[in-house]
Amino acid sequence: MERDFHKIKKSFISLLGERWVSDKSRDITFYNRDLWPREVISSKFGVFRHKPDLILWPKDEKEIAEIVRIANENRLNIIPFGAGSGVCGATVPTSSVQNIIVDIKRMNRILNVDYQSLILDVEAGAIGFPLETQLNNKGFTLGHFPSSIYCSSVGGWLAARSAGQESSKYGKIEDMVVSLRAVTGNGEIIDTSDIISSDIGQDLNQLFIGSEGTLGIIYSACLNISYLPKFKTYSSYLFKNIGHGLNAIREMMQNDVGGTVIRLYDELDSFIALGHKKEKEKKENILKKYFEDLNGDFSDIFLKRILSFPQILNSLSNLITQGCLMIILHSGNENDYVKYCQITSQKIAEKYGGRDMGEEPAKRWEKNRYSISYKQPRIFYAGGFVDTMEIATTWDRIEELYYEVKKVIQDKAFLMAHFSHAYQDGCSIYFTFASRAENYNDAVKRYDAVWKNALDTVIKMGATVSHHHGIGISKAEHLRKQIGEQTQLFRILKKTFDPNNIMNRGKFFSEQ
Image (cartoon, rainbow, N blue to C red; front, side, top):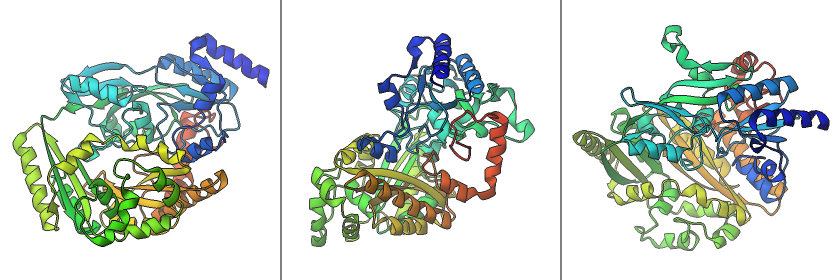
């Protein structure tokens, strides 16, 4: 087998050039995972269970098609890799056959911009922030702002059905897609622009969006863009409790004045966001020594001492009476309309007891909108772990879902949450949880228990296990429980587009 694989490697070198093929130890180790915290825990403890066999960097779809042909001939497993910012293990090599990482970042060009039709044609390897900057320089925006915008790719967004922070205005990534070009697992190059979807009653783009590389490799996409907004307003309100704030968001969204960004923080997250400057009650002084550095950073003392006893910290958080903070950003190119939305949303906020907190909290959020993810490594360095969980449901269930999930996590991890990605029919809850353990086995056991308890509850409540992070390995079992016999539909698609099961084996419902 080693001799056979050596021949396979030589065939890839002949195709791509020696520079773009690697089985060097440093590359194999780097590509052994994405940013799924469970695998970050493993790496921290020196456990590397899923190293790939080869890394490839193709430059265009013809090379991708040839890679697929070679993989079919030799029954290899291809794992498409964007920028590696995923947090669910979708790029983790788990197949028993040889695993080939196909990194698409060389394919990062803007192919065309139709400024009349407002359509951007871009290769899948383009990284978010440089792409957005180029559009901004011309007076346009894609409107897609994930917190990973500095280190995530267009292909990754499409593969995982990504949502940006301004999805309430612009929609999620699947709402922006006009057409795609992709190389399927059987080597066929598909261009969905050749098919007028409305004529056949289906949107073929959606077969590949969210498929996480299990059907093929997305090469490029035509996406809707918008004019860069000229006017923007900032508002913040403090509500007595979560219920009042959620009612306000629902009414704002259903009256089309919900804003470009609208976020509601639970009591603990609000306490941190506001820097606990407004609270005067003596009983909350207990918390100050624990949260002194939490507003913007995690202190080592907090991490090492407090994360070991999450139930105590969660109990202390119940003492907070400051309320729940909402921030709203409105933007657009008609100043009168932007002002109208701000004024109308203010009236709705006041209707539910919202106290005007001015512009500053919303402006501070915007200034630091991408920073939180880059502070999480300190938790791992201090012996803990941190993860985020984005679930979603309709307005009639959202508050109960929050409390039910919180109930089953709070004895195992320190927990806080905010509500974002709001729409007319519902919104997402974005939980952040952190804990620690003394050794690898205990850390993984605690981590798995948090996720299992939470997602069991999500399914019981009739909510969805993912809003925008995707499925990967992390949520595959619970997705299967959530959709039941509909898994057969995926198997039919898999057999059609990837008959030899060479595309990201073991993900979703495909065989290892």
